[in-house]
Image (tube, rainbow, N blue to C red):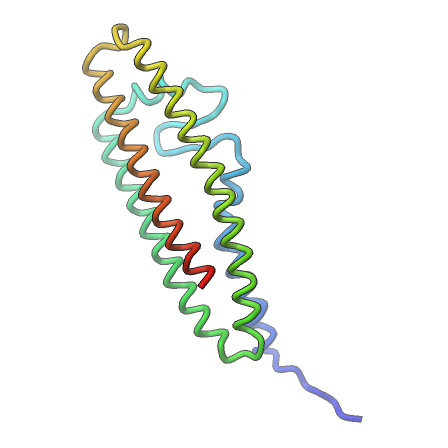
Length: 175
């Protein structure tokens, strides 16, 4: 009778690969199922008036929002690099690369699905707020109207940039 001793590093590498892949997807999954999506300075809570929140933000808040979105994109780029590093690390473990690929592919599906839900909700809310802003243009004043319109545009632009970064992430996960 022969006894096979399993390499504990092999098991650790495989478990680590799977955990890493799902850890990447977890924050996006949580955000998608959270009905209260928040950005710095405002929230898409069903209980709060988004238009009022946006009107209250000023140019400094807009700049801060841009900075935070740039940081989010940088974090996504870092995650792409971490995926590549993790792939290299698990190559030495028998079966590690296959498990990593399956885990990352599953995680990419979760990220894509949940991110799409979040982006659709934000887009719907921005469309609604834009209509509401147009209806109240006279009462909010031209300066607030212009600043709020700019903010909505900035949010849309930043959302598109985040979407592009997430596409890079999910492409890296599927590679």
